Every structure is written in C-alpha cells, then in structure tokens.
Image (cartoon, rainbow, N blue to C red; front, side, top):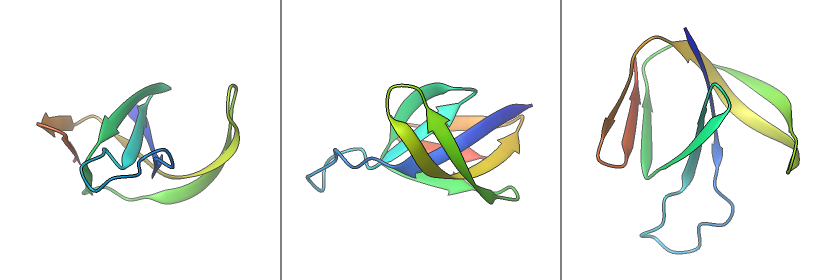
Length: 73
C-alpha cells in the first residue's frame, strides 16, 4: 500500500502551472489536478530539504495518471 501526501505547490505562479505536489512513498510528482477517492486525513510532516509542511494524506494501492491528473482509488 502506498502512502500518498498532497500539498499545494507554492512555486506555481501561473494558471498553466502544476499546482499540486503529490508525494508517493516520498517521491515527488507534480499534478494539475488530484482526484482522491479514498479516506483522507491531515498530517504535519518534516521534509528534509524544506522543513515542516502540512499535507492531505491517504493510503492506496491504486494510483493512476491521466496526463497531469492524479487519480487515487
């Protein structure tokens, strides 16, 4: 089961930018939209190079991508 953490990408400045950071077992991806179809909870996490960050967190075995949209089931 994957642990997935989602937070806003504060470096996104334009409407065309990828506004979401999606961390899947610690590996970061960027997404334009995220669809979450699993139970979620908030977490406060320490990211080594960044510091403390707040996330929407979930666990899932099913993560698919349709272009730059991340779908979590």
